[in-house]
Length: 226
Image (cartoon, rainbow, N blue to C red; front, side):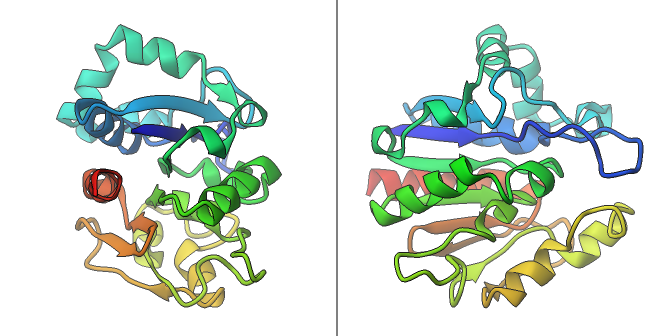
């Protein structure tokens, strides 16, 4: 199993003056799920090098067993510090792609042509595409082979409007992910705020929030081992 994990390179939370990036737990839990399942993991980001970690996801109350493991794992931290640029990776070389969330992807991965091209290549090759929390935003400009939005008519999840309001960022983000996925014709699925939900529609696997990251990773592993 060769899995490509794509992280954001964006660190500014709109015009708020606060920092963002990827959410540590949404990277750490899937990373170790994949690693413990024997997968070979490659990390990439738009700019390459160290992707920004959302400082809020480094706070004590945001820690999980996976994040504790990550922050003590020198080899994983070294791998994070040296992500490849998206221009240096090819979908042909991997079995699946996974996007961790955090608010960063809402800015730099939505319109990123390399990312969109990779998603479409994975999809056309019949390979799983997975994303959790805010990361399903990477799907909004991806098309299927007929030129329709990739999410159109598919069951899909992502960070809810009410969760965005709960964290006080509904007016800061460039768009509300729930609304955008619905507008594109996605069959948007959700459960109560902060509860885990992994939604599988064929090879498309999406999760609602940070609590969903392990479940999304598990569904991806299940497909790769089938």
